[in-house]
Length: 142
Figure 1 (cartoon, helix red, strand yellow):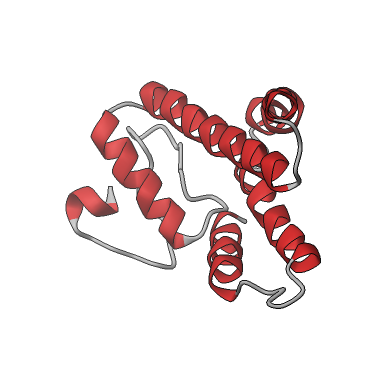
Figure 2 (cartoon, one colour):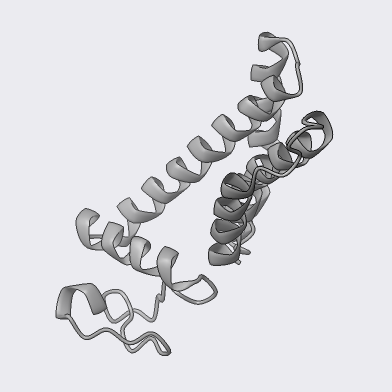
């Protein structure tokens, strides 16, 4: 509603979706809150919003785990299986319990890629730009 009305407030949430008390920004940082609000404004109802957010979380997590497995030099078929397993056990629990852990779990493989960079790249172990970006994203969702 802040986006819709133009009444921006960084510190408080005066609006709830459809006067139902549902507040998207209960624990998220401002970037994800405004992105979620914009997405909710685009899809126009809470049901479609939830489906789209779950799809986005699964997509980010699946691609992340697949890329992490490939970075760890795992066979491509096994990397796909690992990504599917991660989606079944790592992400589903966070989504079904609505405990706000699904976004952190979706971004965890990208953070673990930074650990692999530190282990494998002896000449330049810290890739500061990618490390800063993933840490900023994780800080926004937790």
